[in-house]
Length: 461
Ligand SMILES: *Cc1c(COP(=O)(O)O)cnc(C)c1O
Image (cartoon, rainbow, N blue to C red; front, top):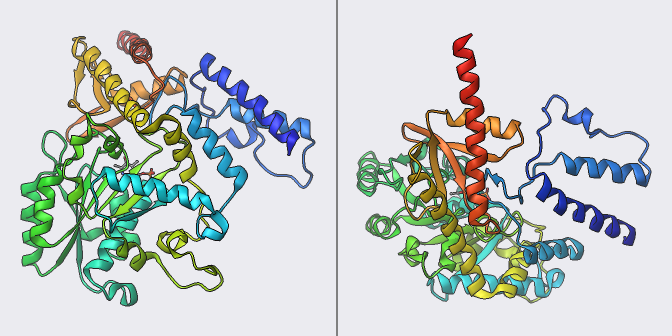
């Protein structure tokens, strides 16, 4: 193993230098990627030198998500203390299902849940787990709600039209999960958003009434803390009132921006969170841990065991129930996604996590100020969002983002809200500075100039 670790250190050092010098990778076309990088297998293995060279080449062509010009997704950057935790999780290779196999690693996960439960003011009855991604957290929320609404579902399956409510701006995992859970995509109601991108609560109530009149069974509302495009926060308090009135489960999908619970300044964006029945967030988004670290908390832990436990004599062989985390998880064998969050959190403390969150909003302010001070820009997003949506002159957002990608200038995506399509800059990389954000706009304007020049040439020809 020593030799491989030495090699690992070498190529990672090289990666860190390369990230600075070449922050964006020139893409290889999908037609060539398999052959160009020799990705296919042969009967004979490779000698170590060739194997190492191949891996280095593979790294050279892999998109760099921790660089200063990666704004394409709802994650980015690198928290070194979290990275070390994740590397250790691989070396230790525990599985989180039993205390016997996970030992103190199970305690780490418990400690994380305990503190998050305090932060969101859930009662002592709450507990949580880690799922493979925010989509799966939403799935777990939905399944718990389904089983809580109609107790026989776990054994008999779904036999009525159970209705799910979510905003038109919510994540695409909601309809997928409705299909997985046997509820069906057609039973998902998409509630329109107001101009701020938040669920229209009047429309929510009207839709519920309509379903009740039709003899359907409303049972679940998904509210979003940080919508995928605009980064908007649904109004949890108002939605909760409706849920209480009609006896519906309220899940808060905080995959993107649920991390605001760690900030004194921004936690009011999820005001009323304690009124929900389940809450999830991705530490691999705002908190900057490596992918993936997705936490779901249920206000009443009985729902976790009710929906996710099963007897298994071949697995549970010690009397350590509370620490046998397999009894509340969606998986059997489960990698340790808790350690990376713990190593970071222990290192920087609650205050350090708060700083990470606040810095992202600061960078968003920098970007918004730049845009509002430059008349060539149109801004579409609102304050208190780390998704900065804008257009530059009349340059089409899709064209601009694709050119920046193909030119290896910057990684940034585009999105749509109602009638508008725009560039969506995500200021989630807490390693970035004001300078990096301003540099991004220079890069973008250079790209836009290229498109404008080409258009001029085309119109002259
Ligand atoms: C990212 C995101 C998800 C999905 O999380 P994954 O970890 O990618 O599965 C769900 N909901 C929202 C609002 C998100 O932004």
